[in-house]
Each structure stands twice: as C-alpha cells, then as structure tokens.
Image (tube, rainbow, N blue to C red; front, top):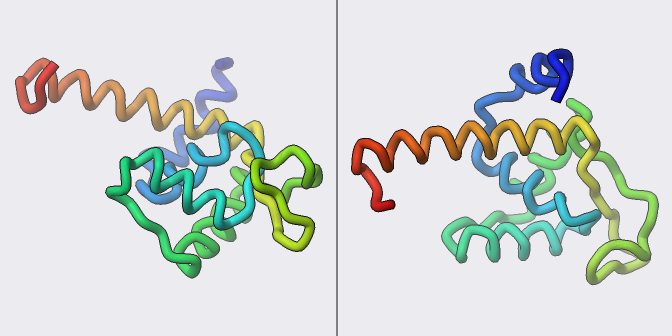
Length: 119
C-alpha cells in the first residue's frame, strides 16, 4: 500500500463493526442484500444478525463514501437474481477492510500477549 493509499484509509478507521462485516461479506464478489446477511451470519458463526433496515442503512452509508457500489454484473454474484440489486466492494473499500482487519489483528495480538485471550 502506498503512502497515499494508507492516508486514504485512516479516516475510515476504526470502523463500525457492522460496516466492517458488510465490507468483509463483499470481498468474494457482488451480492444482493440477502446474500450479504447470510454471509455476515456465516462469518460471525451466527453471533451477528442484521435485519434488512440496518443492512440497507449501512449499504447506503458505505455507498456515500465510495466503499460500496452497485454491481453491474448480475451473473457473477452467488445466488444472483435479475430483480435484486447487487452490491460490490470498491477498490477503496477493499483497502479499508484490509486496514481494519490489520488493526483488529494487532489488537488481538496485544490481547493474547496479555493473556486476555488464549493463544
């Protein structure tokens, strides 16, 4: 990541946990809303559920700041449906979710070093 790209993402950190999970759910490709919800549930081992109103509020907010965009290629999304709107992560969104994952990993390393959580 270049210096400009690093500076570019710092303003987004730390992320709201649900926004992070939405971006993380889109890393493998565009998804419709239901697909994002299911991916969040799977990635969180069922500990996080997101109702549609919260999901679409997050998606709109992430679209306003250019982290998410409507996807063009309906055929590339898992479980795609012509009538459903698809969302994809932008290049900036990818950099932000990677930076947040690295930030969380560093915090986890500190927690392990202090024996707050097991190795």
